[in-house]
Amino acid sequence: MAATSTPLAGSGPSRSARSFIERLRSGDQVAHAITLAAAASILLLTGLLVYELFIHSSETRAKFGWSFLFTQTWDPVADEYGALPFIYGTLVSSALALLIGIPLGVGAAIFLAELAPPKISDALTFLIELLAAVPSVIYGLLGIFVLVPLLRIVEPAIRSVLGWTPLFQGPFYGVSLFSAGVVLSVMIVPFIISISREVIRAVPADQREAALALGATRWEATWDVVIPYAKSGILGSIFLALARSLGETMAVTMVIGNDPKIKASLFAPGYSIAAVIANEFTEATGDIYTSALIELGLVLFGLTIVINALARALVATGNRGGNA
Amino acid sequence: MTSLHTLRRKAVNAVMLSLTGLCTFAAAGTLVFILGYLFVHGAKDLSLDFFTKLPTPVGETGGGMANAIVGSAKLLLIAMLVGVPIGFLGGVYLAEFGGATFSFLVRYVTDLLNGVPSIVIGIFAYTLIVLPQKHFSTIAGGLALGVMMIPIAVRSTEEFLRAVPASLREGAMALGASRTKSILTVVIPAAKNGIMTGIMLNLARVAGETAPLLFTSFSNRFWSPGWEQPTAALPVMIFTYAISPYEDWHQQAWAAGFVLLMLVLSVNIIARLLLAKRKHVAR
Image (cartoon, rainbow over all chains, first blue to last red):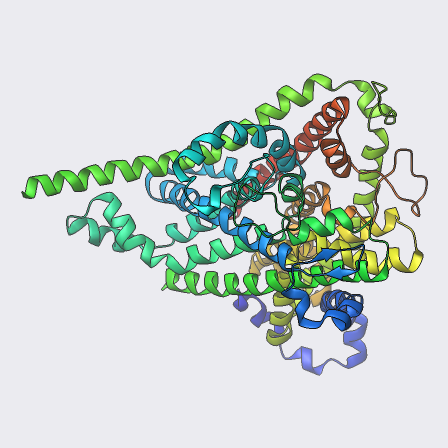
């Protein structure tokens, strides 16, 4: 791709011979300047975003310092703010989403890349990628009216198998960390599938053929050879999905239960960073209240930035490995 | 012994491969389920009133979401005015003018901006516009959606410009066109359809966004004249109606959800089919 611009950049000796005025008249400098300004404005905008989050959270940062991140009290009446319940809820619901979403997503990606005939694979991938376009408020709608009633029915069965662990104890109202995790898993599966499928497809055919020639079954060739080869790319897709689910707002807000307490049970209602911002921002009366919510936004921003950067690095190394 | 071992391996093979198939159909089946469920629950309450009338007060049946539909359209218009010029020109810079280091930086930051959760973009628009003005407005909501459009607009513009064969550029330059002239008259027209499709997909994506609107454009039970007042939007209405305790509001939420989903999915399907066709011709 770089090759396309190289012959243009030094296009003929006449270019250097032309005067600055001439080049200006032909518009090249002007066009360069305009597009450069647009590109630079993206940097400025992103910088401004970080600055605004930082400035408008200064009150709580000054008042609570780092302890904001580690305290559990969230009491707007007494102006006491601690982010821990929300950080906990965000991490636990996302972890749950990964726990359900990874096997489902990677399994489907294996099927689509290795087993399905190309036409069927393309058609199914088309359907699955459409899932990624479904607005999150629709997932929330289905979460409230379909998933939550469904989980109320399935709950006794889950409890009878896993009820002895602290994770599945206490009353179950339907809205819970567990419900949030399930909705999130449905939302992230399309991301895992579409990236993992590409990465698995990019594994050279001789890797598979060598394994099959040594007598491996189709599954063994896939699991022991192809998947390890595509590992970093798949891991990248998982991190991208994680970043999505950490920042997901509407669907989580609608099913997580909105209760800022840390409980060991997944059946208990919880709260996530994005959900508390969505629910309380317009009601936040005092300056400190708003500042606390904006600081939560800053925390969420930092969290997703780190995960995204990791994901990109992994996908990049995965692609390099795939092309080698 | 060996045969037993082989048998076990074959069984593992069959079981695991079927499981991967099951995963796939579970994932693809989710879409079919979502479509079917929304059709069954949403389409039946859809009438002309939904598109032409204002919401009724609680308890009164009937009414529609005409103000939310117009509100969403206005928000998308502002979003397009904010997101498309910056995104498009930024993409042109990356594809046609960029130097190595600065381009890397721009791409990196663009990806970073793309990863910012939509609710955080909402806070940004709030501190930038709502806070100084001290009231919610259509402009603030549109700005939030516009910022969300920028990263995708940049990357899709760059991609489609790069897909234009070098021979076309060289042909234009050989005829004596300046670089700008060749970009304006040859390269961009050649990539036009792709770029337009990219913008459509981008609009469809932000059309369903709810979180950044909650405290920027807020909501409104009535028409919102001009650009300076809070406005209703379809996704926000779905949210407020869904979490309300009223049965007839739930029904309206389903109807609105159905309309929104049909809108978003049909744009996606058309755009993807167009892009797929183009790719086959180009390669």
